[in-house]
Length: 252
Ligand SMILES: Nc1ncnc2c1ncn2[C@@H]1O[C@H](COP(=O)(O)OP(=O)(O)OP(=O)(O)O)[C@@H](O)[C@H]1O
Ligand SMILES: [Mg+2]
Image 1 (cartoon, rainbow, N blue to C red):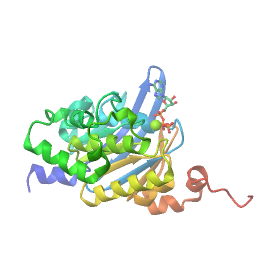
Image 2: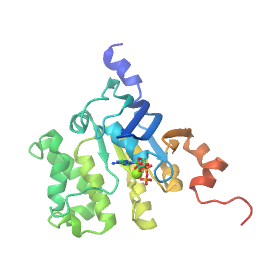
Image 3: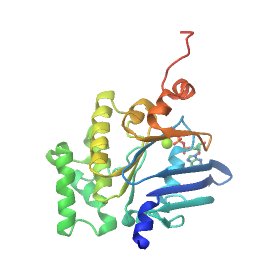
């Protein structure tokens, strides 16, 4: 009916023919990928496939050398990360990148920085929601972020991302260095956030875990998308199973 309606039909995130280089080295050759509103999309692929680079290009941390990144129907290719956060695209980086000497609370406040910090009633409401989602963080607001367990630090990294009030949350390697039980707990939180309406792009080495909660999945190798489709189909694909899910062919 109007401009807003047609923008609503567009994918929330639409990455088209992305290429990303570090100097002469090409990390992403040609990746096209999209996330529709309300979807949880998984990106899987081996070490060095270009997943984090793709995420850096999408979130504005590294400027792509070719291609376009549309967010909410707008061409955001050349916007820096902080301006993308203000539009609702928030990334939780690989390795979490918390401020380890700062308290949990200060790390959360920094998550709201792109919206002017924690001054308004709305930001306090967001904080309350985030602490309800992660009660462990509420108990530890004054603790130094770097002194928490790996699982708690990943909770904080996600919580800090949520303080940016994302419409799309991109998470790079949720499971990094975490015990399987903690990974399962965090995956359940992501599934719940998605049920509540948050769109999520989850980059994950633990393919089976990611495919279990995702609607749609992309497999990346060598800077290209080599497969994509409904995650249930990707999970049944014998070549994907072989390469990423640790299943071997009959010769045990
Ligand atoms: N800052 C950088 N400078 C130069 N080369 C880089 C840089 N970051 C990544 N690369 C290279 O780009 C390629 C893709 O790396 P990237 O980190 O995107 O892969 P990934 O799929 O995220 O891997 P992982 O599963 O190990 O996280 C690799 O060859 C890597 O060595
Ligand atoms: Mg990576």
